[in-house]
Length: 159
Image (cartoon, rainbow, N blue to C red; front, side, top):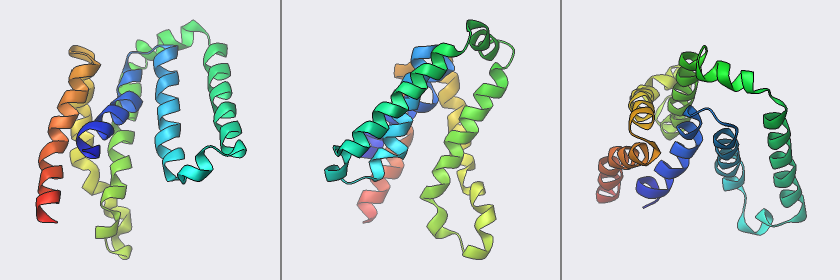
């Protein structure tokens, strides 16, 4: 269920929502990334500790400060002149983050070749980004869920 519902929603919010270059979209993506990549590795008991709450509030305030200090011209430049670079950076980052799914399968002497395993996710990221831009975020989430379904079902049937 996680890989078919939660992961597509979270990953699309992080990597495809900000393709519509707006402060709010980028803010939501940053907060989701913080939640997924930092908080998800914490125990439930420590999530609500004063230290973790203060870290989260600090992260949110810093993100807001940076995003609202940037001029509108910056966001306009990203959404026009530098959009291709921005799109490819998000797509490749999305794909390379999936290397962790395969890193245990790669012998230690070949670990530098591990990104080769992420090529399918990079290609999927291009299609998901295209869908997000042409059809909307809902459709990229749905396509992501469809892409994850066969692998997830195969994994659970096999185990």
